[in-house]
Image (cartoon, rainbow, N blue to C red; front, side, top):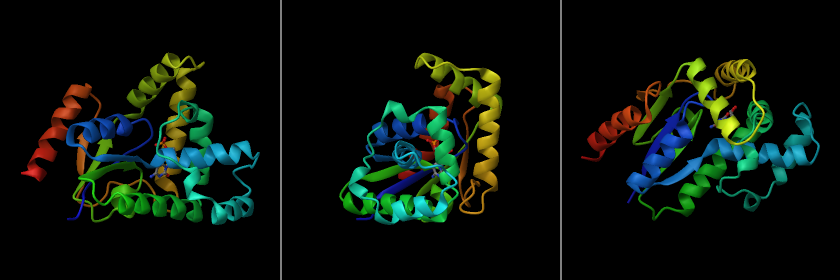
Length: 215
Ligand code: C5P
């Protein structure tokens, strides 16, 4: 039987991860956080002291990169702005995207007996899983996103300055939306979820669309 696939796309800090985790737990679907894969690659390259502009070096490394080096286990060390920024810079390279997309399809194939998957990112409904059963797009204005990210970083004990976070988010939006390869768009046929309000409000919108699909 074909697995049920839900895709979640949206800009940086729009709450995709929290929403995907909620869906994963409630509907017993496996969660793939595609941003985490970009961050893991970024972490690996930073440790090798490779700069984002070193296109050929990165290409060569990706060609022989061992898939087993990447797990979908969360790692708090990857959730900082430095890694996020580096990840968004290497995410413009088609060979990096190809690697991450291949990884996701391989994971779905290797877990074909599971009930389904919830996958979040920027291009999941538009490029990676175009035939998904349900496509969600999360919308939150930049100020709310910056505010939430700021609080998250403070809670994690990181030094953080709100205007800097807001500027970073706006820059990341431009990078994600304007890049040539797989820009962030609202995928065709997606349902837009407004995540500006409370999480309770967001999950009530989500439960409504999922229950309609499952019934
Ligand atoms: O979602 P997260 O902030 O963890 O993603 C890190 C970076 O990876 C993003 O800023 C984005 O540029 C990139 N990304 C992407 N496509 C995805 C997921 C993430 O380009 N599907």
